[in-house]
Image (tube, rainbow, N blue to C red; front, side, top):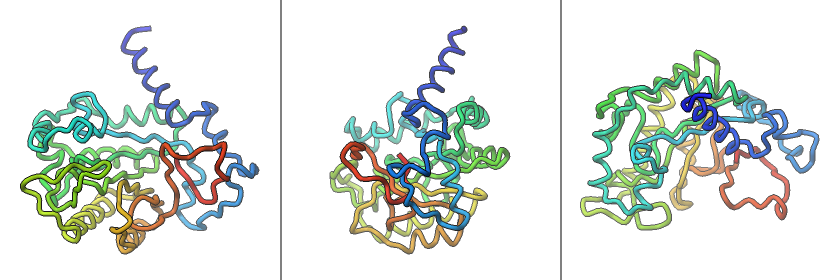
Length: 275
């Protein structure tokens, strides 16, 4: 086996192992007749029920942090100053990117849907947003990543879910306070939650209107004090078949435990859950 093929195969198997710890195929992840697997969970009774059928998905984290070959918390964990980190934008040029290759891996491993980071905590946007210059269009690459992925997914009838980080280390209005997954305030910041909320709403509206049918919206890192159900109401109006997780502006449609769920001591799930 050639080294390139070996690396590609290994990467695919590693991704499958991360997303499916049972390594038994997507049909074996949940048994609806098993009480411990959430047999008491009620379906939505509408277009969101796709979530009960497509049980094995690909969740991709990709952004500027990929350039130094780190993960999405590179700026925070590395204590990198904002003015230094944003220089990575000038190096963003994934010229060989082809979403079809990702979807080939998705289908070959039995995955049924994709979730992609539109904006992680660093604030860099992978789409043609009109609400910040810190996006893929203002780079040497200059292409709309989310648009390319959306088009490829629609062509293959693969559900697309969009991840969006509410925490934003780049936006001057986000109220960074040095809490977990937040930077300390920067000299030129002007923390104002209500101004930042309008920014979030505008970006969510872009994502829900410019990229065809969206099957999910995956919020991350909101604060209880900042919940506002009107944001999810807007998403439901624009994309009625999209499932929304519980880390955003209300309890959403499904839970997303991370590093804290202990299967040996916890009761069975009582609502749809992605982990």
